[in-house]
Length: 417
Image (tube, rainbow, N blue to C red):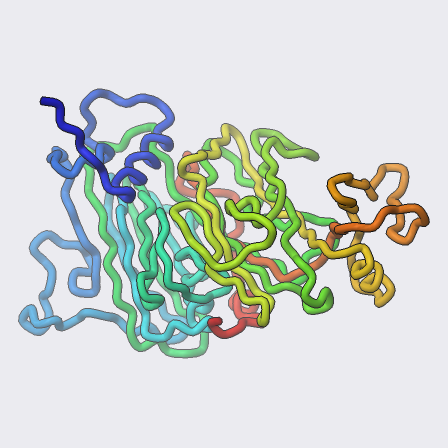
């Protein structure tokens, strides 16, 4: 009799990511924990947890304080202080991270900085604001779960991204703010493995913000990285510019430049909400690979994500990902903005399915030109946009800057919706 084994969605995801990262078929038997079968024993793998009760992940070394009676379940973090969540030699693979903090205000979640170092490198592969790393933009929290992150009740932060390392891993949280954090609880769950596979790649993440994007210039979700790798996805935060009133901000297309692309990308979507799998605007929802976790029309802010797990984005030499800064409204409304001197540049008019192009190398067509049709008018605009991009690379460091001034992180934060 033939028996079918069903895997959980998370177990399947981890297996799928590692298979895609590997890119090449491996041997029939491997020492690395990539099979994901719950019933299989993995030779050479040793499970370890780093936590305040065992910060060195020492075998037989957990719960030393207070005679094992929960003597060190959390750590405080003073302004300017750092705490090492994990410091271990490899090879190994981080499989899960869980953290919670007492103060979950946007100010604290943006003041905390999360960094990850692979193979004893001095430069971090991950250097991002703590809150934004865990899948919600704008330094905020939300109740959600997806394939890579989860926050079951809005009070904790979980990450399930597999992170292999060859000779060492170090994870650090630094308090760059002015307020003391009284409680930080954490579990970093990882596996020591006996062999590093050459096809493995290193996990990276970067954060970028422009508080007033330039009209007609794309915002870089992922600045150009060089090397062989995989773009895993992004979460984006938008505080839209009140100068445009309640006009729609999300007409911009996500564009992915691969392997030498210059002026034009290889991959392009059709709009911001289209990129995350919805349409005609976006409200609150989440699923495994895309969602909108903040959609507040009163505060005029949105946070949304897209993770390329079932639709991998590989690159051989380089990758850059951008988001056009474009909104839309009726032609009448856009003309009224122009009359008030609001910064914008008309792009197209959609007249019941017939698209009039307003941009040309020979000169742009003014929106008030006689005989132009009426209709929905797309226009370049300027907003406050930030993003956390996730990717794998074939080396433990990249050329991206890790400087993220706390002043830039904290400017114009808003409270949770």
